[in-house]
Length: 216
Image (cartoon, rainbow, N blue to C red; front, side, top):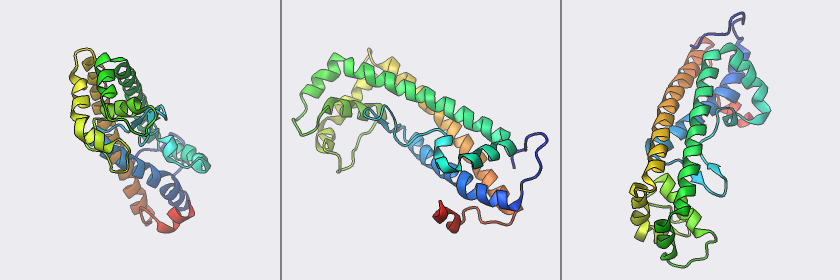
C-alpha cells in the first residue's frame, strides 16, 4: 500500500470504505478506460469540445461532491497524488499535441482538397470532423456517425496525410506524447489498483461495494 504522509495516523475502516467507493473505484475505472483508448492510439479528440473526450485529469474522475474525500485521501497517500500529478501533466502535453496537429491539418492544402472532394452531406464543419478522425487515427467509424460511409471509402487517404512531410512532425509529436501518456496511465492504473486491493484486504472490505456505487 502507498505510504502515508508523515504525521498522519492510520485511516479508519470507515474512511477506507468511503475512499473505496467515492475516490478509488472511480479513478481505477477512469484509468482503465483511458488505457483502452491509449493502447489503440485513439485520443478521442473532439474539435467542438477542444478537448479529449474520454481522457481526463485524475481529479475530474471523482464526482465534485466527493472532492473533500479526495483531498483527505491524498494526505494519506502522497505518492499516489504525485502519480496523479504526473498523469495530468502527461495528459496536458498530449492535449496540446493533438490541438497542434488538428490546427495544422485544417491549414493543409492537401487536406482541404481531399475534404472538398468528399460527398456532400448534412454535416456542418465536416472538415473538422474529418480532421478529428485523422488525429485519432480511426480507420473505422461507428455506423451512428453521419460521415461513417464516406470515411469508410476514403478514410485511408486522410490517414495517409499523417505521413505528409509538412504534417509528419506534428503527428510524430502526437505519437510521442501518446506513448508517454500510455506508460503513465499504465503505471497509475497499477498503483491505484494495488491500493484498492490493499485497502480492501486490510479492512476486510469489498474492493467495489455495489451499495456504495449506487449511493454515488
